[in-house]
Figure 1: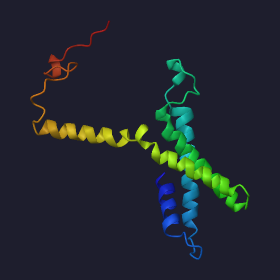
Figure 2: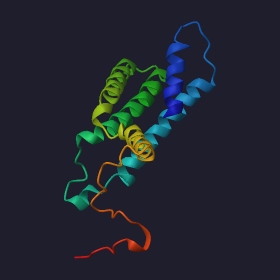
Figure 3: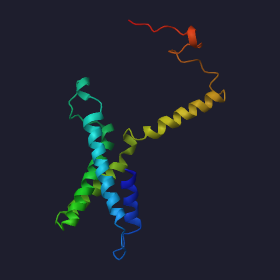
Figure 4: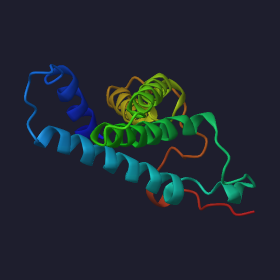
Length: 161
């Protein structure tokens, strides 16, 4: 994703002029990055994603949290289709570009409703909690109900029902 995003940035802001000569490595990184994103999204969607059938749902069920990975997959796929249409000088290049821009807009517009922000929020919240515990700011709070105040041999054995 980083190669894809960086190459997109470089292509748009550094080599957008018709007269500028683009180094061969930049489009290659763009294509390899888009293909890697597409393969990674497909791997996640079909092999890593939570087994929704175990929860009694259809495997085709899509919820709002899936919007990020699906729009990322659509963006990468449409980027590659647009590139192919440009290289073959197809009449569909404009349509592919429009669909790519729509998918990319949905991708960045849907970040707030996806699981993507958790990647940044959870480590930051855990770090803040440790800093507060180290500074004694949480000393006035009672311990969590599932954790006794003493550790080691005084810990309660798990209760099974």
